Length: 446
Image (spheres, rainbow, N blue to C red):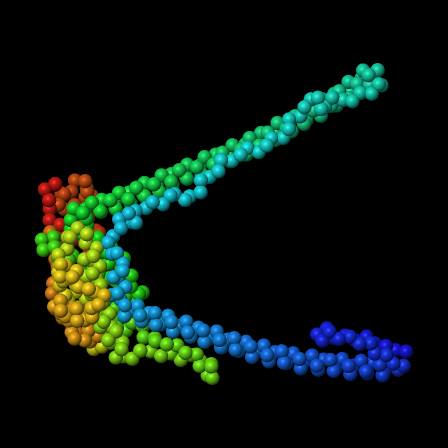
């Protein structure tokens, strides 16, 4: 009698095939294995198809979900543009001087003083007393030999102990020296941190005092902080120049506006299951142009609102806002800066306006703002008032460096020549990066 055991791990099947003929038994086993293998293959095909179908369905669901997320993000971005003015109305635009100060603590980890390693136990002479037998007590030489051996061993162990103590002491001394160095560095860093923090806070206090005194540069710096705190999308240039006129209490703002091409246009994203692809829908050019115009009017009113609201010392009676763009001239292919809107607003009149309910374009026009009826056309206009780039305090520079010799003694140089030399050298150093050096009229300090 012949028999063969066959198994199939995938199907969890087992069978014992018996027969009187070896070849027949082997053939039956072969056929059975083949049947099981075919069954397993078909089962795997079904499983794979199911998994692929589920995976495809899952992927479609994920793609559809991603499309929904993109749509929400696009709609939120468009809403942010349309609500550019409303965004600032619930925000207190005044500068919180205390928030500018540094109240942080030095966070550098202070080094830990090293602990001395526990010394080994000092050998005790009592532990090295020899054990004497009766014979040792009777024969002095034997006793003395054992005493000498123990004493020698004691001395050796004591010497080893002292060596270990020396090593431990040296290691501890090295660690203490390192600790002392690290502690000094930590203390120096902490001191430097505290000095910088105090200097920062003192500078902020000084800036605050200067602002409350109505000092021109402090007011300009304050207004710069106000506009810098205003949150706009990333594609906004958010670049501006500010000049304050103390006599008229007028603030001039030269503001860089975004180009219409910078605005997002995506409105909706759909996933088409039948084509396994995404379809984007964008706002029309007409909607984009209207949105762009509204945005520029909103930014104009928003900037005025933020500056007037933040003006807690009533330093500003009026604001001149000039909106500038820097588009590419299609005829020359070069960027050409142009002012496309300008407005002067009076604080008392402006604060009476309910900005939550206004149409920004109508409000701009009622305030006698100047600009094309279609701002997207980027038609240049003459600003109501521009920042004066020339300053009567500045004088023409004199070239000094070229006339100097190697033997020229700077300490003995005429003070006026020296004052012209320093700006000349500075201009050569920094004019490649846009730096501009001016020389003021001489004072009487010599």
